[in-house]
Image 1: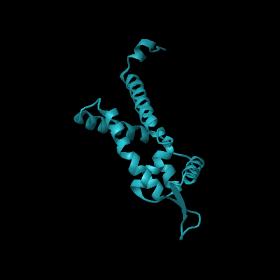
Image 2: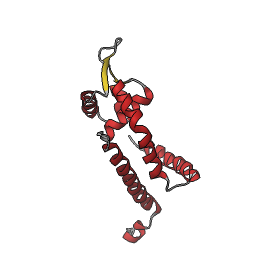
Image 3: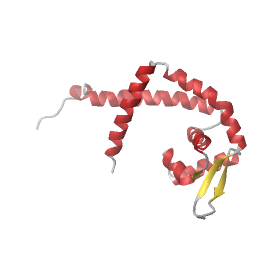
Image 4: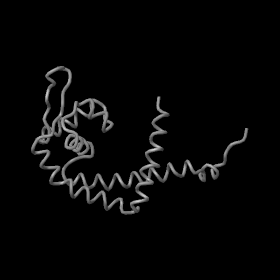
Length: 153
């Protein structure tokens, strides 16, 4: 039985892409998270507020699905945002088992205040690519993500 050598594996383009993509994603996320923390929000709180800001009230379950959180984690995040006065819970009139989260005026005011600066920070992070390269990257990374998603059970 023949084994690949370590050198052959290290030079494999799939492995190299995985390493480069992972390192780039970590660095980009770290920079974006540093910006969020300036506003007193952790990344999941920011993502939840942003979702509610752009999409309106959402069932708690859907929030978890959209930002990839377990039900226990979304409850914790919603509790924190509710304590800060940024969101409120609303029980469904049609199904008492369903609870919605809705952004408050205070939460909307916060995002109106911080989002333009956060957007500038994201633009600054992404300036490493031209507009054409960004479009190519979006298409290729989306294609890779969809393929990887299809491999899940």
